[in-house]
Length: 132
Image 1: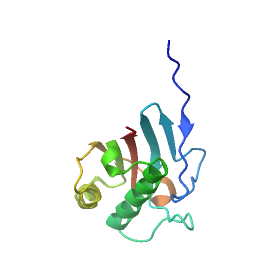
Image 2: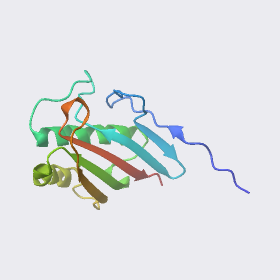
Image 3: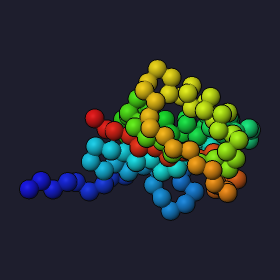
Image 4: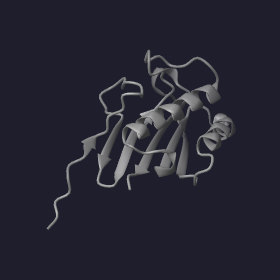
């Protein structure tokens, strides 16, 4: 009988520090689960000023920083969940999303409209990556 190791916290020194009681990412077996990320500036922990595309770019940069802490990259992402406070922003966020995943297979994805996000963010993304 094989005993699976317990989930481990993934270090994310280049990403923003959590604003709540959670860890940025956890590795469990061959998967790394990233907590929802918003457009926090890593140096200050403040929400970036700008439109939804600016927020989406920084959100995905934060995802990339956390993946890097796990020794992974965007090609390892297998699923993304996108939360939007205005579903009308879907097309604008898609443009940034496609730029981020350029040259790699697009992961499975769900987009959900929500009534609000932490700190007044307009977009939040969580991801699951396969650690080969």
